[in-house]
Length: 422
Image (cartoon, rainbow, N blue to C red; front, side, top):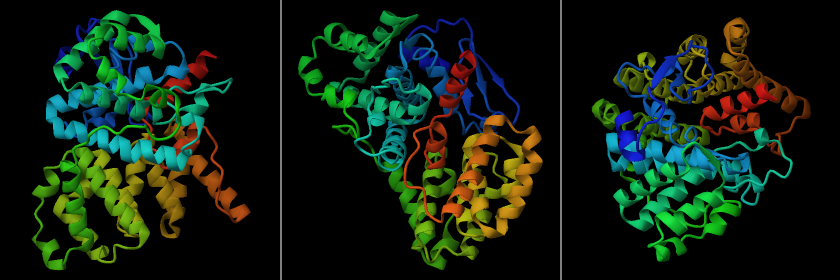
């Protein structure tokens, strides 16, 4: 993975790259540091199926650590580039279809959801360059700089139509600004006046002002490949609407051959239909068959296990409760713990045991994780007292998580590092 990153981005300038696996109750996926990356033990699945966190943190060795945003308005220069390079690394490892699947998932599941559900299309925090105007930088963090920034770079690469030339541009950009902190105008200068100066017509085809300064969804959409998404939808539809005969004849290969991100998408498709009440065929008997076919209760892949638990809880399948309680007791990563507790708190059958488990686990949980889980109970109490749903969005990091937006987890560590410095 580091070799691929070096081919893409040029010389690795930090001497060595080590990873330290932190205790199970580390709240996040990873945190980039020059020379040494902190990672969660949940990435150790036994089959190398959870390496995307490592790819992201490796990419930060160039975009974020070597070239850094000079102010928080331009945070996309760190995270948009890193997300793009992460997907490039994964594309080199697993194929171009998978790279474009990751971009598509980011566009639909994170960017669009954040713009339309967490904020609204005219909200200034949905701009790529965010006007802080005295606003605390902590309050504006979201998937926007990650996914909108990565989409802009993908569009530029596709318009150029020459991936090797675009990779050369990435290396030239890094070399030009190595060990410096920059703003977007400096990046634009490097694109238009120096590195891609012979591609004026292509550069002019990008609606730069709207991409960088207008709120809402981007004005232009990159080209995505939906091949892998269609595989997810096909398998989900079989489980949701197929006959009992079709379900019994299903083998495990179709699921097992999927990448982890596809499996997550498969489960999210099930979850949406179950919650809407349209999945009438997806009964408890079918859930039991799925678990036996795919050995979901015992999988070592925490991404898959978490999504499986959420689907089973959504379907009110009681045998999943002890599995879920053990899962949130063994690990402390917010990405998993919070949504599992949320589902268990919402279901009368699992609520009391979830509350007891949360209280018992508090002494060995990270304070960040405790706060995120506690916020679920606080919100539930507020809603119960007011007897109405919360309609306004508080623009803070807790709200992004509470609305089901999966924000790349190193956001939170960046926030806490700045708070400590203050």
